[in-house]
Image (cartoon, one colour):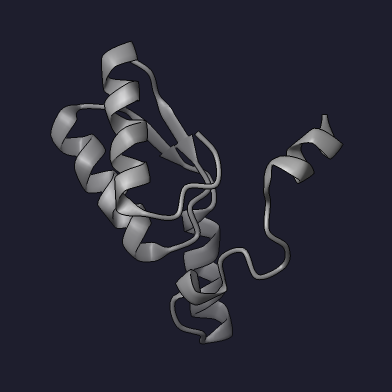
Length: 87
């Protein structure tokens, strides 16, 4: 799964990981969505690794800024055209 920004998208990824006995490695920017994912994976026993959350939390604290949720994707939107160009 890529470009996940909603709870239903998270639910779908967790369901698939649960069925395949997989691990979820993510870079979700929104604190609320990271927390949601962590709670859902924890309740199902699906392992997950948050690569970006700890860094964002430290930066938020250091820079005295609020939740970064409103800034997710502000640099550029990632769509199929982008992925084709990268490939």
